[in-house]
Length: 103
Image (cartoon, one colour):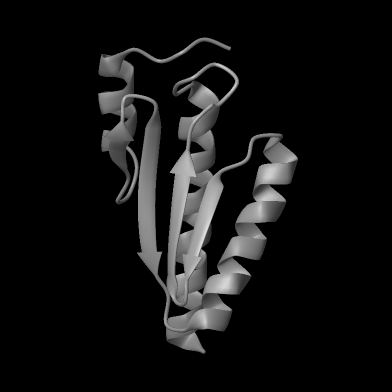
């Protein structure tokens, strides 16, 4: 697994929803959920996806605001695995918000 170049990171971020580069080695997305429990359900869904991928985000829970941080700590930067998991998180966020809208 190789570190992504700045150009690859920029291109990857263009394909993601709401992610931004936090520093040279991390990307971040904060999601506001309707309430605490819907945020916890989202984190649980992301945890299952991360286990399947064998790649795990750092997660910060502040009531209904969930922040995901992606980086490949072992390599000290961003890899394709980070972009892939970020895209999967985007899908899970969209699904969770759609469920909340429909009840």
